[in-house]
Figure 1 (cartoon, rainbow, N blue to C red):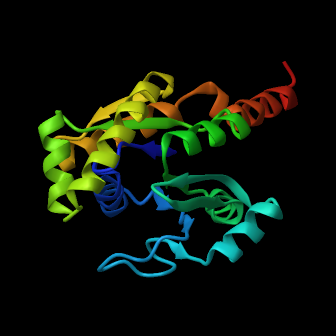
Figure 2: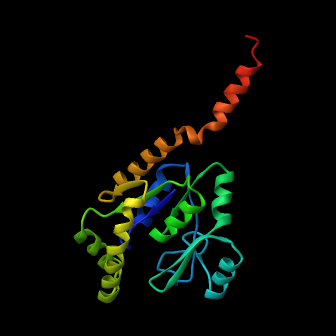
Figure 3: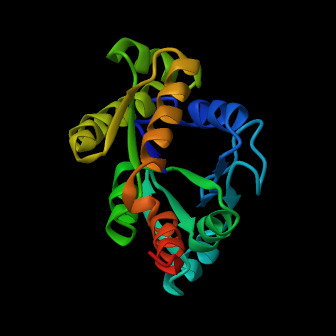
Length: 200
């Protein structure tokens, strides 16, 4: 599952709440060239890598998607997603809108969720709370203007006003998606094989 949002949209907080309250989900860790923020840990929040290391991963086809955002590089290692899928978990990727399109292009069955703050004043307040400089806030709001235009290409929209409700909305999406026939063909085939063995 891919969750995208404008900067300050709350995707990291929603992701944390989702992982806390639903054991089906696991965070698919992305790598980035940006410096870590206070409280972030390498291998837990991101893989913090050098520009040279990032370039090597990209060149060797090890990234599912990548993008340059506000001067920093971000990418999703294919290995992170593959390991989670093999264990039967739902990988959660919190990436930008371009990355979401890249993932959807490679894996069309990926579920994409656009997370939107309830209003502009809330978005601005969240950016200020992160102690972004006035110039950075202007840059992120300009970026948000373009990102929100991409929302209509996502599968689902969740308004992130109250954290618990936003996480609950995403859990409902997962419930619906897990019931789709396209995701349960193995069960259908198993039942068909059992029927085929009957002497009718």
